[in-house]
Length: 280
Image 1 (tube, rainbow, N blue to C red):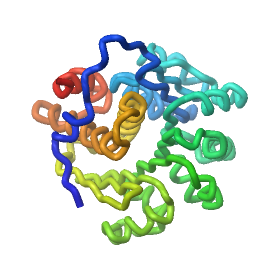
Image 2 (tube, rainbow, N blue to C red):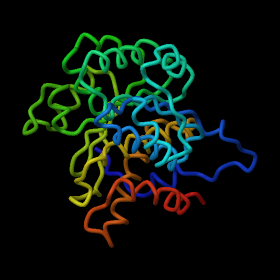
Image 3 (cartoon, one colour):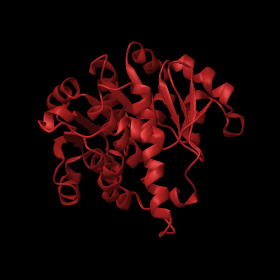
Image 4 (tube, one colour):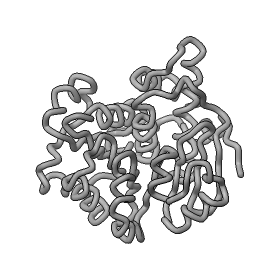
C-alpha cells in the first residue's frame, strides 16, 4: 500500500506548452442531472472546466440549461433526451462521466447502457453516483465493462451496493478481490480515500477530513478526475488518477484552514490557483 504525498502533484501537473489550443487538453462529456438533482452534474462539469479540460459538454435535462450556463458558461449543453446527439457525443469525447444526479429509472438505465455500449475502448468512463446504484440493480450490465476503461468513484454505501461488501467489512484485501472481479479502477471515497488500481496496487490518501462532508463533494472530485485524465493523457494513467484524487483533498485542506466547511463551489473556484502552484 502506497501513501500518496504532494510529490504526485508536482509529477503530473506540468506547464502547458506555449503553442497550445483547447483541443490539446481533451474533451469531457458529463451525463446526468435529473430535474431534481441538476446541481450534481453542474458541479461535476464546472470542476472539469476549472481543472483544465479543453472542452466540456454536459448532457442533462433541459430544465438545467439556464442554471448550467449561469453557473459555468464555458460548458456546452446537450439535451440527454436527444439520443442521436447524445450517442454522437459519447463516441467523440475523450473522457466520459456518467451518474451524478441521474435518476434511478428506465431512462437512467438506458443512458448508462448507451455509454457502456458505445464508449470507445480507450476512453476513460467515470461511473459515479446513481450510475453505480443502477449497476448494482442491473448486474447483467457489468458484462459490458469488459474491454472498457472504467473508473468507479463510490462512497462506502455505493460500494456496499455494487461489491456486496458491508461497510464494516470493507477491508483492503476484500475490496481488492471485488475490484479484480469488476476489472476496473475503484476510487473508494471515505476518510483517507483508497484507490484500487488495475495492477492491484492500493494507493491511499493521508489527507481529508470532516470539513469535506457536504453534498456535491464527490461530484467535484469526479470533474477534477475527468479533467486530469483529459489533459494529462500522455502521462501514466495511474499517476494521473492518483494526482486528481489527491489534489481534490489537498484543495479542501488548504481551504479548511480558514473555513469550517469547504464547499464544493469554493473548491472549484480555487482549483486554477492551486494548480499553478505545482506547474513549475
